[in-house]
Length: 74
Image 1 (cartoon, rainbow, N blue to C red):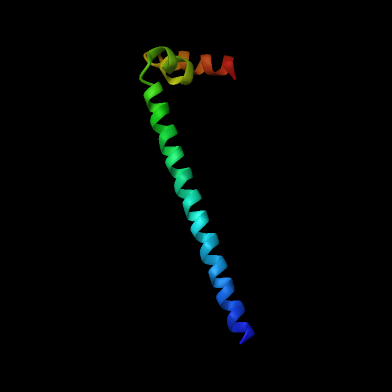
Image 2: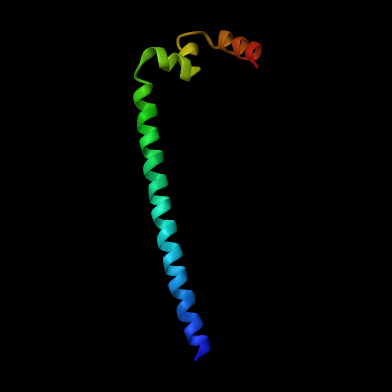
């Protein structure tokens, strides 16, 4: 009888714990999605896009210039 009671208690505790973790993961996913959307919106502003990415700096330049610029910076 004691084993059965302990088993039921363990199952109940596990259910409560897993339900809490599921809520936390869903909140984390929602926050990450919002951050992704915010980042994408910020990339629409040309000044911020130039500060946030290095690809725009390389766009339209010959590959040899890109390689030498990259070697100088790193």
